[in-house]
Amino acid sequence: MKTFIRITVSLAVFALVAQSQTLTADITYSVTEIGTLPGTSIAFARDINDRGEIVGDSRDASTSRFRAWVWDDGTMTPLGDLPGGAVESSARSINNSGQITGYSASSTGNRAFLWQSGSMSNLGTMSGASRSEAYGINNHGHIVGESNPVGVRGFYRETTVMQDIGFLPGGLTDTTALGINDSSQVVGNSSTTSGGSNTRHAFRWEGGSMTDLGTLVGDTWSSAEAINASGDVVGYSRDAAASHFSAFLWSGGSMIDLGELAGGLEFSYANDINNSGVVVGESRTADGLRAFVWDSTNGMRDLNTLLDGSGSGWTLVSATGINRHGQIVGYGINPAGLTQPFLLSPPNVVPEPGSAMVLAAFGSLMLRRRKR
Image: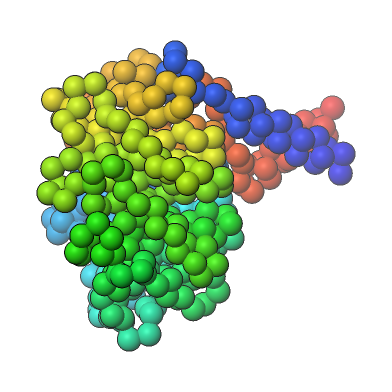
């Protein structure tokens, strides 16, 4: 028992050290190539949990269909697809228990799924709908996404029922729920007549009440993509003509423009935010799309300029997820010229262990104890 307690304390200390990792101006990231599933050559990473497990999808070279996967410590496992499906699936979000959600093609249309313990289950649709897709899951297993009973409706699923979260006042019934935190605050976008006909605004929904987050000054559209434990929200805002997109951070009732990379071409897009307030996304430059990281001290920086020698030959295009330890996932062009997913790790990061790691550490120390 004492040995197990010492293991637990040591692992907790490692986790706290990782959690305290701050984003300084001279930080450099190491690059790990995630790879693709057999028979595919292009892949995308979509999300990462605090244990360093990553989910995404690979495109089949012969059919161009996507196949969902989970990556853990160098091993990529296909998630399969729902029975009767068209061998197509996409993994969008993973929580710290390893539960994964996304969507899979079925014989009657896309269906939201929950994957856990090696098995994919069909979450069904809202009443009267023909399809559903899930985009986010929190550490309680609560899921958000969209279904189409009338128009497109965002849903929140806490137990077994997809709850319609409604739409903004004056809206046209269309809502998409994209992100959720552990307080079950939900974000996404909803149609509204505010600022003109048939526009969409970012929202935050909680306990049945939806708040319009508005747009940046002069814009008419916005979408919220992710929310952290503090209720801070990131996404994008754009003008009516869709001629420019600006990444935003909404915090404390105010939306701020995160700007763009140097030499930017009026395009930046925020995809995720961690509990330390660090934001990741992409920005268009004269050389094309480039992945960025933003924090309140350093502003927006090109991740391609923050790599150690392991990043030689890479072009990081988009950063799609970040965990509490500052590990970042996304996709880019690898040295061979292929679109591949990547994992960026700051120095001295120790991801939180899964149960397998704890048991392995326990067994190793017990063996050493017996030998002594």
